Image (cartoon, rainbow, N blue to C red; front, side):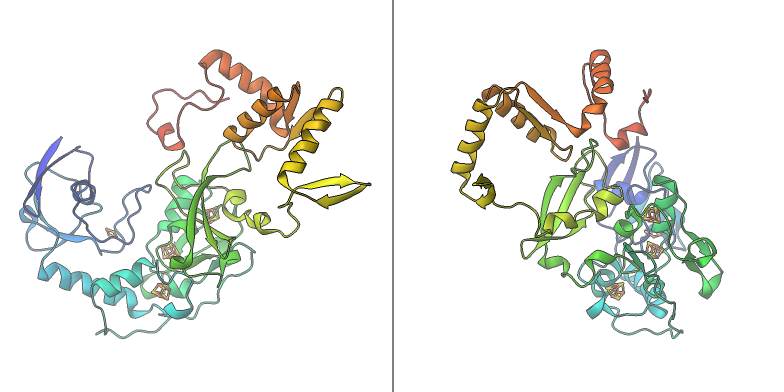
Length: 374
Ligand code: SF4
Ligand code: SF4
Ligand code: SF4
Ligand code: FES
């Protein structure tokens, strides 16, 4: 462990920590833009500059500087504010500020910092970018005129997704994030880069102009597409699922989703979904009450010899358990779902480990001593 002082507060943290992480754990907020908890330190934006007594004469980036014993750190002062404001002015030199029509408005980290640091004018003048927006795919809009070159998209696609879709190209003012041969995005469309982009440079296309962030009600649920059980946070407006929100606070998936979980939610809003119970009367399906429908099901199960219940794999474990109890109560012996083909595997794992599913979360894989992969 390492002892240091941050803004007059004594702090003891693991020696692997950076100044930013030590401050965060001590409840001291340092602004960041290129830093992301799940990515390796990068140090691209310089928004997180702080003063260290032992390194006088210059401000240093807190997100990349490791803590050392006896360090004395100051995170806020008039000089630090002035330098951070200058950094923001640099970032805004070529940024096309179009917050009123940018879907990121209201949760844009650049917008928030610009407001917090009162960057009302810019002493530096520069050309704005005029890149064509990449809309060649149905999922992700790439508007590089809004990019702040934080590199989060490059790093998440490289470090977490292992797809390597993006890279920095060109130099100096011309630097930009590009795909291979600048041909437009062609990848797994997992949306991790969209989730981590701090500004409106990468946006989910199906969500465009649907709602402002503050209009969305967030509801946590579990993705029903496969047995991984990733946490899903729905963004709901007008009783419709408008988008899937980034959530790395709970669940096994650390905010990571695949294309189905990230973009495959619109079926929930389909007007062809059954939302009212139906019973067959005179050969026709007609709307009815839940009581009548359940009675019809119960009678049907009693009457039919060898009745069975078949379901899809979109149900959660809890829902499947309830279905099993219902089958038991109704005396139905045949219960199956389309994930049944994995039964041999899960039964084998259960007999060896005592648990039919994974015993850890995805991030725990990184720190596990032993990994059993089947
Ligand atoms: S990326 Fe942020 S600052 Fe830029 S236009 Fe969009 S909301 Fe405004
Ligand atoms: S959607 Fe996923 S695979 Fe595609 S560029 Fe973004 S992070 Fe990489
Ligand atoms: S596209 Fe977004 S995440 Fe990628 S470098 Fe630009 S601002 Fe950062
Ligand atoms: S957050 Fe530290 S340099 Fe960007």
